[in-house]
Length: 172
Image (tube, rainbow, N blue to C red):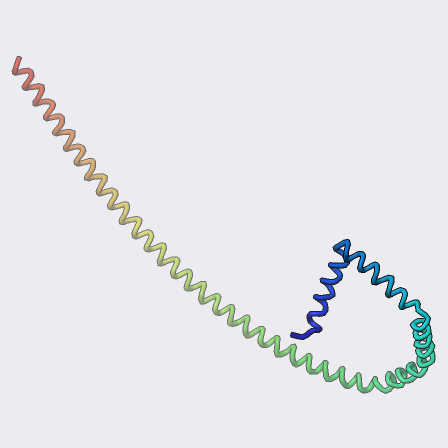
């Protein structure tokens, strides 16, 4: 694994430890005392001043070179910008064409799917209507049969009751 990818993680863990614990804070304070001591030491201070003086001395030279490069660059930059613009335009046209193709394909597939769903829904509704009609007819027939049986049973019970009352009347 690349150690540079792990460095931010290690740094974050270290900062979290230092700032998150008392022992870490004490170590941080001790480290900062040492760092400040090194930063203010005469040798480091002299080196720092030498680097600053060298940078001030070289700044005009660097500035002249940068200005010369900037003066030479407009032609190069303009040509590069034209190339980039042309390529960007071409890519944008290609993307627009492909997007249009994909949109058409999606619209066609959506339409086909919607028609298929509508057909299946209609068929399912018709099937449900047929099944409901059959169930209603079956229930009606069963109800009529139940009424007929109940009527017959009531008639038999009436006849039995009349026969019993006739027998009781003749026995007296």
